[in-house]
Length: 220
Image (cartoon, rainbow, N blue to C red; front, side, top):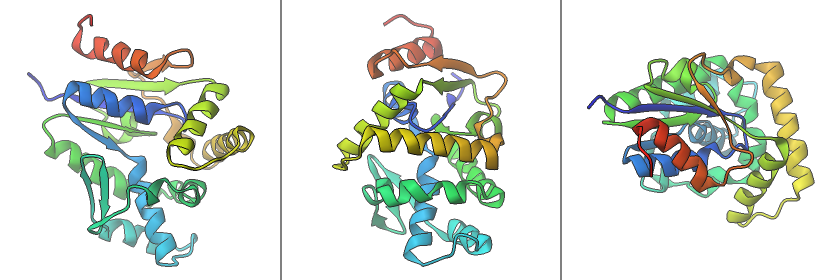
């Protein structure tokens, strides 16, 4: 059987992270959330007081960091930062570094290396199907309407013990979309051979089953 390589892209809040994690578990392959790489860099930028316009310093931090995924834990330079990387401060600031093309190249190369080293891999993010896994056997582009995205993002924060109003989340999602489309529209580009999946009216289990059937060509 050929090595199973899956690329999943989509806007923030579409629920692609939860979908990807459970799908990878069901397929028994490695799951990698590319967003955690950027969050890890942002964490180091904040901890080391690196200025957001110091692109060289930011890229150096990305090159030097040691990032390891251990089951549900994220280890950064041998420290467990799983919870810290999901903090609101990181969430609100990470977009500022995602626009740095040199940084994206560094992280994309690291993601490619992960894919090469694994027997099977699912990587999700925003330019995975185009720039990280262009030869992936399966590519999906996840969409959902703003109401669904807001609700899912709200639940994510609640799961982390963070109470944030839906109005605030809705506003920040729209600002993030606008920022990314203006500053770096290429990262939101859908791969030509990616299947678009609208999950607005699908619960998580339905999403997982739908993609699983496509990949395995089975009925469950």
